[in-house]
Length: 124
Image (cartoon, rainbow, N blue to C red; front, side):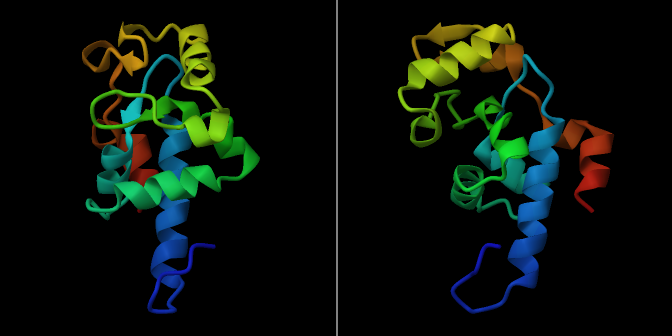
């Protein structure tokens, strides 16, 4: 459970559950950003918290967390997979293409959580 500075737990526990529900919904071959996950989970300014949650994710979430990139499409999950080439290989295995060595083609592969009614219902 994520513990905020004020000692409360309900908001952050719920936020973590929403983040994990959204990450589970990212289809293979698609990516989304930390900020889009945060916004869809109800805390638009919490992209870094999303990153922290993914870094500490349970195995079933960690297995698909490579589909979350930064707002520019850059692979920033090196702490989880080692060198960005590992994350790139996982994405390429799903058909994701790149515009630069470690930058996903967001125009082609971006998944918008807020456009997925099932994903949005799973966060309520």
